[in-house]
Image: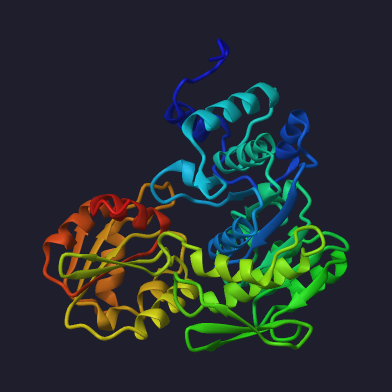
Length: 424
């Protein structure tokens, strides 16, 4: 161990990093660029695929990770936030990074940063990029935290970009409409490099910005498409020859689009990272992602976990639920960020939920559970109970008879509920 190490435990580092920078969200690249340069990884020694979008980013990272692992590549994946442990954010070879490796990279970052400070997310992203360089990965999959243009992962150039969807979220930071948000997300595009767009109705702002930045756009519905065929999906790219693959084994119907976008990225990177058709199939079939329409039996009750936290993702969650067999009694465990359009998130669930267990979440932006209860009561919700946190809400829901329990509203809702039922 280094005598100069600031902390010996990962918890010590994480608690300190949460206070290092005065702002939780500080969208700029100068400080991250400075630290990366000091570490000598401003031009990473691995291929970079950057993934942006309002919803679907984590799913696409999981699919791409599984495909490239099946092809025999060394793969790094950075996602956020985590559900139960910080280590989930950084994976190599399909495994979460261990505590000691994180401590080592945080120490190197601390020594290199000088007077520069990083936010918690920025430190996470730099730690991932540094760990991937030290591990010698072939390709790194970097999930944008918010927006794209000024997100920490955009401090390095992407060899390929994937923009999954454009919806209204984080409007205080990204802009008032889909055009403005689309321009921000297109900030990950690099001149001459491929950019896959999986939004079927992309805003003009997104298309204009891709054009201005010189990206080689591949658009769903024009350059590639997908349709379900029984238990498989039929993918059609520019060759117009349909290719059959397994449907992803997690999530709902939207995973067809995410799978198609991932295949399009793999096709666009074949010169640098060749992948066989069988390896794509293996990856799609083996990919898993926690908390995306994840169904678990707890005794006689079906629990369904989904990190749906904005109107667009809530709509997808509702659509996936509607494909299931109806049940007699449904309970919801709910907690959310206070800066979301919560009426649009919960409104479509009110008619079919028999009891609500609402709790606070561990975030400065978390909605007050009393305010959530007032909203639900105003919308006509039945049997609303208030708890200090979502862990207490989940424990109470576990004691109440039900055929189905829905857990949704935030990563910070699903993670504590996982712990309550000891899922992971």
